[in-house]
Image 1 (cartoon, helix red, strand yellow):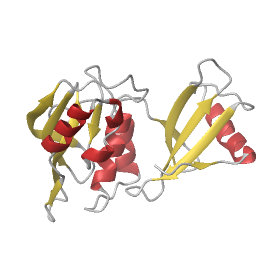
Image 2 (image 1 turned 45 degrees about the horizontal axis):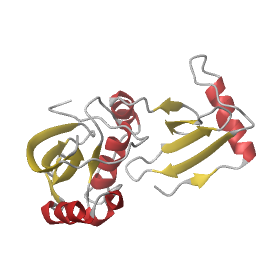
Image 3 (image 1 turned 45 degrees about the vertical axis):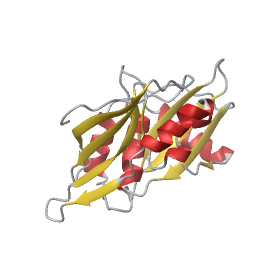
Length: 208
């Protein structure tokens, strides 16, 4: 992501819009930073990250927004699938990896973190591991392959995931409306343990 910081007046506009929802989380107007970025698979929705520094520790929330409505990314696939239908989502071979990365960054479960790894050398937290394990990850990594069905708009992505302390080779089907289903999963390497991450993910085992 290439986050862009909002100026103070724009931050207040965002907080006022959020404040109109009685169920919204309350952010301090004096101690909240708001950054945003575009998403290549949505034409009218952007992603916003709000960090409230008024609390200790600070807390962070992310939203999808068209500038009016702010939909919280709550750790489930539901808000993403809802926006996919409304936006609507437009997936191509050029942005399908971006979408999968975004999806795994914002959908979580109880079985541990999951990362799509396009390049083993840039895997999150890689440099926190000993050199022998780093080299093993690089040797076991399988590059991403993308197939598509021009009639249905479905993509089939084959590549490497980190999940639950393991390196996994996976085949993921992504429908035209952005729904994920795992077709194949094979263990490549186990015993990979990273420092605690503040980002949570969700392992999708089957059609959603």
